[in-house]
Length: 158
Image (cartoon, rainbow, N blue to C red; front, side):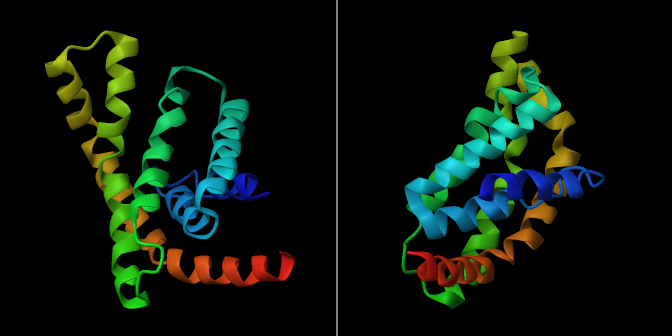
């Protein structure tokens, strides 16, 4: 269900390029579920492939979102709220800003780009990465409240 929520949230916001909740939800699930957050993350990736097609654009999704999961895993588990309110949105936003850079190695391998062509590809997508940055920054403001809510809800289940 959590992976489907990620997919649906992206679909609802699809009219806004690179503005979505996927990064924020990846971090929420990681803060709450740690290793188990990979399950909804890859459910989302598979749903995206099923819906939009398993084409070349999809291949980097196999690792790009995992980078955000891994960085979130490296953050302290018991971060003070005042710090988390700054760190979580910042990490989310930086992932959005560097999305094109993270995506580039797969593009370079699949299309045979040399280093200069890869840098050109990254530069051409910079405007989208800047939009991604601001979208993820604002979505990142939801991470701490959603993580706290999800922790409370899951305590009732477990």
